[in-house]
Length: 397
Image 1 (cartoon, helix red, strand yellow):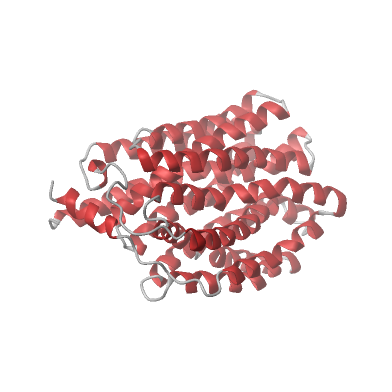
Image 2 (image 1 turned 45 degrees about the vertical axis):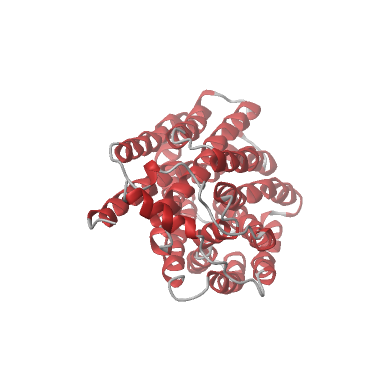
């Protein structure tokens, strides 16, 4: 590999991470729009959570499908098109008052977000090889997209109302531009067709156990994220701006957690790091729900860090558990990370309508402990040889 190749890979990794920023912005925007849908359009908790469900349900159906297709064919066009679709669904909310149409638009956005992740994660792994730090850049991009969405929504929809959602299409335009800059170069991952030379044996048992942990994490993270602003306003008496800041802190902490996870994986087994991170999440999630005032912000940040340390590690674990089906592994791990939480959100919302939001969120405290338990005894698989050989072959072309 030439001396210029690492710098080239770093540049492409950063551009791809920025594309991830732009598309995951729309996942964060869905949750950030929930209070405005409640206050401006009068939706119930359950109805507003149904918007999150529409996005997540579409993602849960489409994402594994795109992952499986990515195992068979190279579809480079998917990444820029998915970014545009993700942004268009959110932007279109301004043009309707119908709950049904709003849910359809949320689902459209979810399809775009879902289509991005399998292809994006596979390309990120091809760029990074077995470098967990560089792979964490890709996940970090998604965290940043989540984090800035509440601020952007507050600065647009918070000031102008839901009629301002077309302004939220701007990140999609910049994300497509980032991908266009990558396409102007010929690099490691552009010449590669997929996992046609993958070696190793798929470990479905390990993959399923890791997936159960992802499901538990997803319900906690998406459940809290969907109702964070409303919880801080109605249960803690905070202003809308301060409550929106709490969601920003929750998502921003994920960026730090992702970066920390990548560095920790250079020294310890990923399964061990993930297991202890989930265990540490239990008192942090409890602190969010059981402390009052600004002290809760400390627990919000710590819970987010602990819940996101495993994020990029789950992606590479999934790929290493299924070396012959990396696209499928990417689609499932990244899909479950959001979709299962979105599927649970309406149930949390319906329960909140009956017993109150605080009581409805309390069961989430137990789920990180469950995630830790299912991983006991699980060991890291060896990284597939295909990743390294693909990089070397591409560099010599």
